[in-house]
Length: 132
Image 1 (cartoon, rainbow, N blue to C red):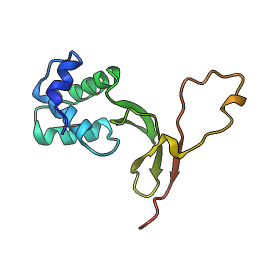
Image 2 (cartoon, rainbow, N blue to C red):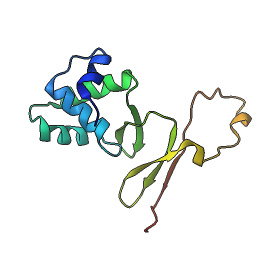
Image 3 (cartoon, rainbow, N blue to C red):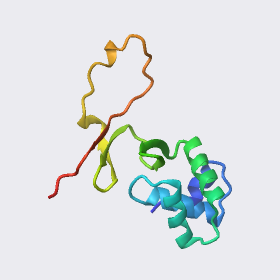
């Protein structure tokens, strides 16, 4: 369980019940929630949290490097509590996003892109998760 109060204080952010609910939702949850997902979840423990507080808190967490923000789900920005280098797989049937460990894929040809300075990259794969 993440200590949301400690995390907020270490980042110089004043802990409030609303911000604590947002941090706990993102850092203790599974997956890659949208801001609306966070709002719905945070309101379960803190009914007074506003949409503006959710967006502002998420943006602060991104700014402080505690979470990532990406547009990998069609039409929606998602927030990723995993800030380590990794790739993503999106299940077309469910919309679920899965983290793929960085060392599971070998991307070749980056050195051939002479006209570009690559600062970072990730692979986003789409398909269906196999049934077990």
